[in-house]
Length: 308
Image 1 (cartoon, helix red, strand yellow):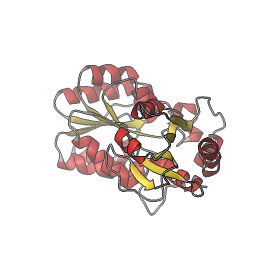
Image 2 (tube, rainbow, N blue to C red; image 1 turned 60 degrees about the horizontal axis):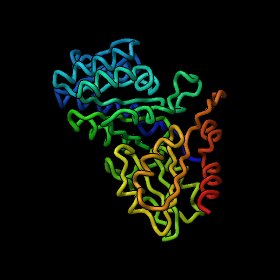
Image 3 (cartoon, rainbow, N blue to C red; image 1 turned 180 degrees about the vertical axis):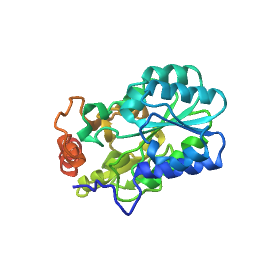
Image 4 (cartoon, rainbow, N blue to C red; image 1 turned 90 degrees about the vertical axis):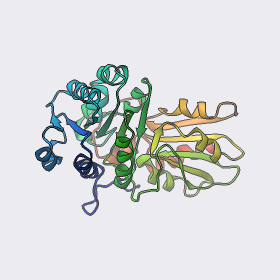
């Protein structure tokens, strides 16, 4: 089974987020952090040092986004953080109006994702967050697979002035960081000319590498999924345009982007991820991945069936 861990010897993505944002608040007076109770305990020093730029609105997620939009209108670079279900789903109208419609930028940083806290139940799961953002224009979406990647992508997102950025953090992570570049897919394993392509997103990479160890496939890694690296996907193709997407959120979220990338080529695309059907047995992260067919064994069976 793939490594799913929060090591005591290595920062988790959320711990890295706290360290990075604390540094950015100290260095850049344009940055501001907006919280809705969740995550407040991670920023005691920053809140004392910058009480005017570290704002806790309480359990008011619509206000979280409204305040971020208001700060952006004044020229600030707001960073808003809470669980994905409370950051994207609950205040979706505010994302649409207070950010997109107003034409201002912000950095949204989520936690808990699709299955990070299974004991929290459905209210704390958001497998549809990236698909929901796809209904709005202009969003860049980053899905780091390791704390070091989270640091790099978060710094990139904050530095991209006035843009709309979403950084999706998770307790599910790969064992090692990869040399990712925002907006570019990374070739991790090269198959033959007749191989298909498997695109692993964020924390799914370790499981994909284990699942395809005995298969002739090219493995690409994406820590940024929007914009979708169409040129990178096309460049990875050999003599066959068969693509399997493995995403840690709703299955098929990036299928349309892949089809557009392969426009004009005869091709097949299979999207693997969290199913639409609700999984009501709230076990551990590895148990959820196994139930979704996203562990190494499940992925091997589905990829081999599709590509051979």
